[in-house]
Length: 313
Image (cartoon, rainbow, N blue to C red; front, side, top):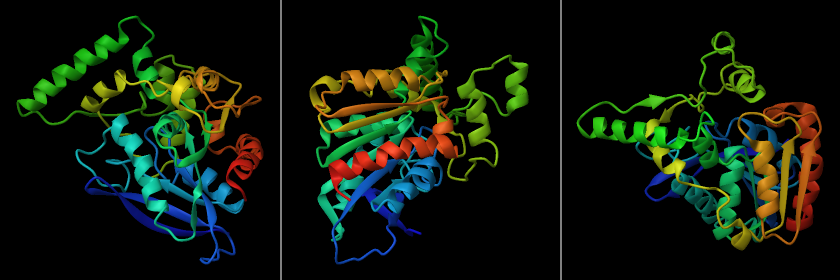
């Protein structure tokens, strides 16, 4: 079993909460490769990024650092429940700043892994954070693209921005902040009543709002006004020029509303990386690759050798 430590590191003036996992037989006198693990949009370090992928990679011999995004989970930062791309990406840089202070981490062997929105943030961060030597993504979803697609109407993004502007005006005049949910339905019955059958939305409810994956650090809360910045953001912008590290992209063969199937193909196609690989897990949907044993086993069967090749074991 890995050893786990609750740690913090700084982003600007606040503490980012993280779980540091050390391999079995850890020897503080040695130098180890390390992997930063980033959670999905609306998630936390106790879910898939840490408990599934972080734990498995640590069993494979890597030190892993799974963190809660700033303003979310157990991390500090105000105002709460932001989904702010620039702050999210800075979290990754600060995570590396922390790792390089640890005498048992080899600063030349640090990688990154992100799941869902965390995967797209990881790819984006790696474009300007070259201390990451290898990049892995699992069902990477470009949150800016998701917000722009909205209800798939041509004016979806414009409607969102109009709503954000009106809410900012209301809050400037003294109204309470508007905190909404990432997940559009409170339960499966509500989803069924609305006639929504999409696999990603169905499984999001199951993962986040039932004991399957529910965690206190993932309360399904989003500050609406923060989404204005997201609408104008593209996680893969400049990937053709700046994403140069070895890259392994994992997603399932079953497409869903969150678009990780198409985003995975796009990231792989656009990355400048001279060494890049793509893995499509047969029969797996987006959320199968969060925690389902067979789907995650297949993902890790290629992720572990990928990191061992590029970071050493």
